[in-house]
Image (cartoon, rainbow, N blue to C red; front, side, top):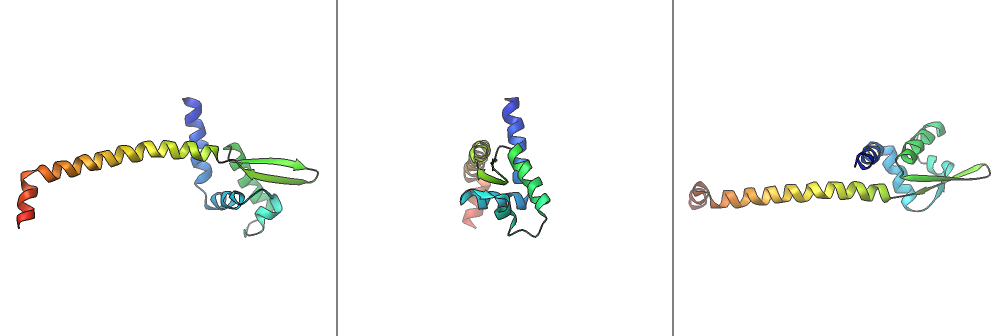
Length: 116
């Protein structure tokens, strides 16, 4: 459980930055070199590399070396785990709101307000 929570922390921290989310969106289209990833950003290559390290630490990106080139690919499994965690709370809040709706619809003052 602790390991799962630490992984969730790493995943959400990595996803909290718009540049990292844009990198993941790029990698969803296929593997890319660090240079290809850096191309659309108005930041230095070392800054892109730092973002990639955060994504690697979170398990969202895997990097392989081919000579002098580093190729990066997306590993979306940690995002799936984060989505499952969020889904549990979405269901919880939907149930709470449904219960509130039922309560308000059965209250006497709710009927009075509908008649006026």
